[in-house]
Image 1: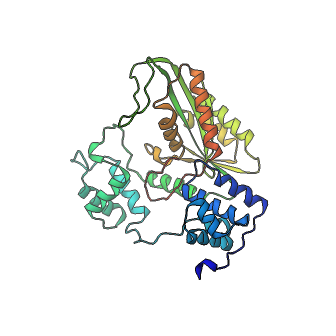
Image 2: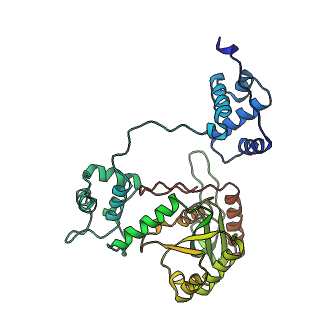
Image 3: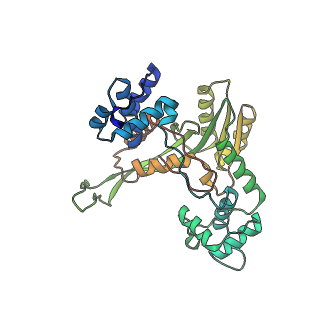
Length: 356
């Protein structure tokens, strides 16, 4: 009886067809999203559920499900439904307090944090009871190990941290309407290095091999602006990381962004950002609204996610025989990134964001 069920009709306008065709041909999209796009395109072409199932190697029920959901809700119907599960025991305020404690100096006279000490600190600052074991689970999920901290700068324990952190998180979660939201920073002293000897590709049971000796060819620094709404990035090589260079970068953004849009920008407390001339330029351009990160809280600046991905995918194991070659490869990566860019997920629960 189920095999004779009348298949629902799928009709696509040109915009939807182009969007689905692009998704179906994507080599970087999620496998399940690509499959669902192929099902809808085949259905719109008049194929039966059974024929689509045979072609794509899935069950008829799978085809019927996504065909029906698309007909009922369009592209929204192709998204995964919310997963059931137990709600979180602790809200973003408590989780943020756990991170803030673990990344600050421990209470006198202790030299390192324990889970019990963090739980006590969180209870004192938020009036929320949390067990040491739950603190441990939160820290493990964040890959935070306060007992192994090697840094020498710690977060300042003052109300400004909470005010600035809340302001930036709210900006990410609730960006102002008709405004551009940018996350800006510099990545400096990127080494252009070439290996003395060629590497060897991976083999069965053996990872790729890379020679540890290298030749230096200088360094490159870049400024980068991340569009928080879209995930797209604009980068520019810079000769010096100073206020004059930074203001030139801001001027370039000012010229390229629609003059009807306000600009909200997330900045850290780098010398070029807080220089007197930079603040004077910002004051002379009232559509620019700066949201300052607290000191030693770079994890609040989303452009750091892009830098992390750039380092892993291009820089860490790259071979660059010249500065120009390094710049060309970074530019190529940025162009490819922007063709499939998506906004980074911001959950306001103190978990590290996932770089694309």
